[in-house]
Image 1 (cartoon, rainbow, N blue to C red):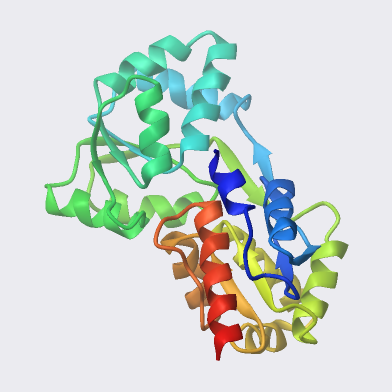
Image 2 (image 1 turned 180 degrees about the vertical axis):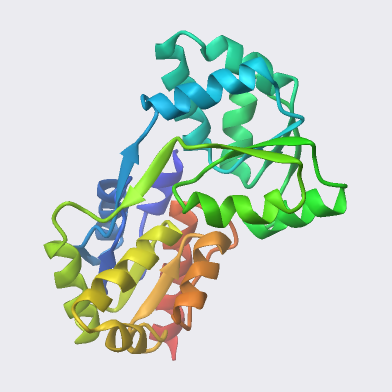
Length: 282
């Protein structure tokens, strides 16, 4: 039985109305929630711009082939996969793999670790709580690096590169994808209004950028404070997929978060179901 089949075997979400902000796997998440008895309101707050066929990524990859890095930071499994597939299409994928195999690979989380291993890469270290700040701390504690490659995760590259640039002689950023607002923001705007009026019991976030964009969309209509006041864990429960997402949500001002012990979609729904059962028992 798969994780999703196990998650749909039953649960205490009947009567709950849940907002979903996800772009990727949104249909799968909604299906699991509905089979648990929940009503789902989908308001996608982001879209992923694929840069894997961009000239800049090819130029960066060729530069790494010509001058290999000492270390490589892999932030996401999706990013590594998109990078290598894009370079396969450009005819240099195997050369990039060879460079990465000779590099010290540092991973931010288990998905990056899994993707690296599928490509035959040996992961020297991974962040225990999947936080980029822990990657920076590890690089600082182990003496910096001469030339370090940083695979971006859609976040502003200057924000990510700056702390590593202070520790390394050179940081080469690898832009594989970028996050943007949806082309049509009306469903997300409607979700903001529903949250502010208490029309949902919980809202799920599977990436930190989904939370950032929800607040940004609320801000554009002058409802930022109203939205964050509603997402207090009492009126509306903010549900995070894991520590990276939770960190951003707390910085934004959301409180009373529900978070699973393991950063996975099914575990997130399990954690919400447990919270629902706890509330029903009180």
